[in-house]
Amino acid sequence: MVGQRPERAWLLAAFAAFGLGCSSSEDELAESPTWSWTIGDGPLAPVSGRAFVFGPSAGASLEGATVAAAEAPEYQTTVGQDGSFELQVPSGAPVSFRLDQPGFYPNQSATLPVGPDGVTLLGFQAPTESTIGALAIVASIYVDPELCQISTTVSRAGTEPYGGVGLGEPDVVVTIEPDVPTDPIYFEYADESLIYPDPDLMATTIDGGVVIPNVPPGEYRLTAIKEGMAFTPVDIRCRAGTLVNAAPPHGLQEI
Image (cartoon, rainbow, N blue to C red):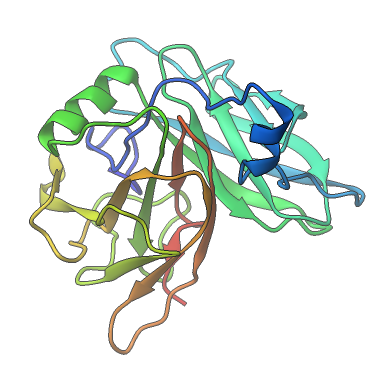
């Protein structure tokens, strides 16, 4: 589940689709919501984090995976044996980061501001293609390859970097602006080994996970609502054929 480490439970809030949307004409490109998404023009800033395999990996590894700025893929690096990575990107504008590896679905971070100090604790929670298929069946979801899939974790203040099992904030309602045609699906927490998407849930459990399937490409903001609590919002640049997973600590974190 989103927010938990791969060695603990195999289900995560993750849905994705095949391929990236592309346009065949300049007019179509100009109408695309991604047209204006560009990298900053400031000094290079450091970015560092970890990539984790979620689900039964069947021997698949993220070692050697490519991590790049989605807005400018020439700024890239590879994931080390321990899952860590480091790169530099221009500062001065928000950036989405993308992870690609054969056997895994395209995985993107939230869109994060990049200042002179860069970004730390950037986490990727990457499901294999087979894990995605299993989750889609459990949730009775058809994953539209022309649309984007969004997932995140609502986590309590002080959550350990990259999250963990049972560290979500329960009874939180997640909203997305602007509105989209599909409703959030929250994850049920039975125990550390059984966490699954349940379309009947109306709010988070202690897992904190939520997925919003089949979202049209564009810019969105996620917010978390629970009486007496405040959470950081999450900005998303949703690209067709991509799972955008806003993982802790860059998800919906209690303030």
